[in-house]
Amino acid sequence: MVLFALLSGCVSVGGGVGVGSGGGGVGVAASLPVGQGDSGLADVRELLLTRDLDIPAGWARAFFQDGRQTSGKDRYRPHCEFEVSNVSDGFEKVRADRFVITGITQRMMMDEDSGVPVFMPNMFGSQDIFYETRIKLASRHQPGVRELICRDWSQDFGRGWYLSLGQMQAVLGDYFVFR
Image (tube, rainbow, N blue to C red; front, side):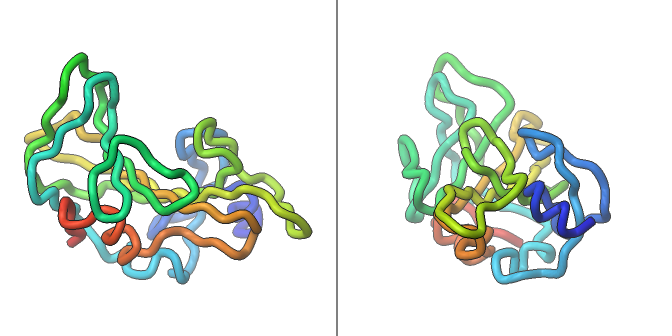
């Protein structure tokens, strides 16, 4: 079961075994021991947004890379996306707030745009693999905030891993604090 979960690319951190769909094909979600990429992630309960941020017009997400908010992302370097429910015609302001973490899932994908999961890793050659961590968020003051999505990329199976809590913090800079 755990091998199938790894090959299907969908893992739930700190939860039980069950069926999940991390936004792109259906996979099996399984609890796995804390590894190099999720060190400390199972212990966080909140995400604090330390200051207001703007979601650009025509988007439902704000991009973060290298400790700052950016207008886009370099998919081949660690990055995060803070996602809200609705696309706005103008800038949408998200106020500084404390968000409860309601769930964390991780999955491997061959393509981050389509969300195609890695069903059978190519162990003998190069293959793009995106390691994604989705952190579901809730706030009674801002119910339109959905999740924080962080990704890293590797060209070879077994050489990359999910971003650690410290790596996510470095991507997000001082906009966010995990607690």
